[in-house]
Image 1 (tube, rainbow over the protein chains, first blue to last red):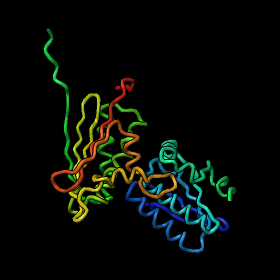
Image 2: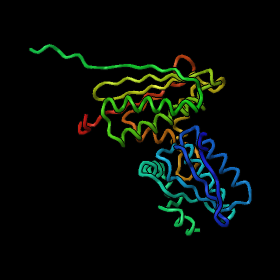
Image 3: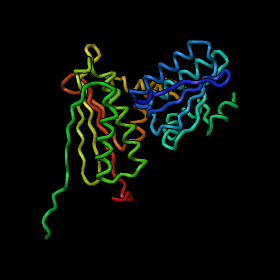
Length: 113
Length: 153
């Protein structure tokens, strides 16, 4: 059976999105929908686990930035963790590193709220 | 005088339906090509990302339906790879990144904005970028990547 491109779980009041496939255009649409669904509910805090992937495109980064902005408007935030070197480089290139907080581990991302 | 050596060059053309689901297959194909001419891993990742960005734009902004299709023309020789992505445009929208639109996208891009990063990535990571309208009413995007002299072959 094919693995889902992403799955969602919870830790206290934080929703954790595990991304299981590289975030090219096809999967980025799933990420946007998942984040939009969460952000339109009562969710204020989201952590996105990027540790399983090696590629992210501008659409996916846009979805992360957009969701972080939405959550901040209701005193929440979106944080990411587990960025591979290649993904960190893309984040740095577009300046997303200055907008989205990133952490090495899930525990440190959760502790940062 | 030694006879002039003919420079090795090959050209591969692909026609793909305008569906995002085909982009990973295109990237896998490009990856194989890039490995043939010995680009380093970092450069390989850059080229895969740029391929994703250009094809995504051609599908999202330059294709009426999935059947419109996009065309990729890859030209490689011993020192460089050129990728041309051609779309047919959308009715009423035509070519999507000319006539001031490219300047607008570039000017408005900011880290805290959701959109506009794609073409910025392409511009920053490629060695050469050219965008112009084509005779089919769409847009041609051409990028070139040079193999660094220090890159092992």
